[in-house]
Image (cartoon, rainbow, N blue to C red):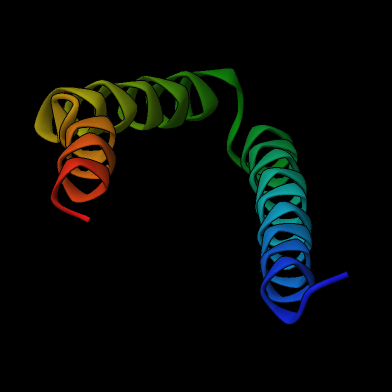
Length: 75
């Protein structure tokens, strides 16, 4: 394999592992909040996280896909 492909695979796999660990930490945090503070606090936490996810999607507005297309066209 070429060196570039090895670097891409290495970075992609590390990104995947970091995403999995982040998801597990989020679930663990949700469990801790619900056990210690109750259902109402967990509901507020879930509402806040959902709102942040929606705002993140709106703020990106396709910039990641558009930048890949534009860079590919310029090269």
